[in-house]
Image (cartoon, rainbow, N blue to C red; front, side, top):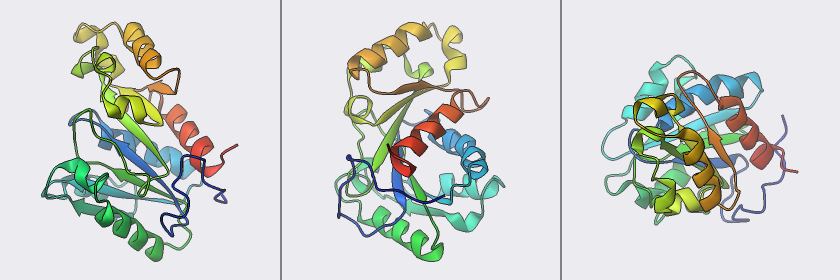
Amino acid sequence: MGLQQSPPTASAGAKPSVAARIGIGGPVGSGKTALIEALIPVLQRRGVDFAIVTNDLVTKEDAERLRRSGLIDPARVSAVEAGACPHTVIREDPTLNIAAGDALEAKFPGLELVLFESGGDNLASTFSLDLVDWWIFVIDVAGGDDIPRKRGPGVIKCDLLVVNKVDLAPHVGVVLESMLAEAERVRGGRPVIATNARSGLGIEAVADAITSAVLFPS
């Protein structure tokens, strides 16, 4: 699979990477790591050569979880310890993450894609385009159907909004159709995908969005 030119949202010339770089952010417990775990076999089946960088405050827990999963070569998972507010290292000063991505590209010369998982953050978390070409924000229905109405920067500015854990909607008093409609409204019709990362619901659609946006953009 050949990497094509990055989409217009990319920060052209900001970094020397060859692989496309995608951010995955969202609040604590929204299912970012579970989404990545579900995406791994789908991307592998599609022949995508990829690696992962995780971010945590003072641990490497998410990276170790992925390394132990048996889903991916552990050497393809790198960990960044933010040591401060999680969005600092993906927005204000992404130097540590840029270096981690560069190191993975040096280790795996054919790399086409690097996924950067942010540490759990609030609805204000956004990614610097010096770090990523395109980014996903993950929320979950258990967090409340008012999340889209709060119009947090993560929800509004991301390239793709993923509404995860849709299976929980009837158990937490959320009318899923209304929540999704509100999300589409506040995003002005930009992409919103409903998922259940545990069952695989919607994961192919997320992989399709990644492929069309940064691997084979039209």
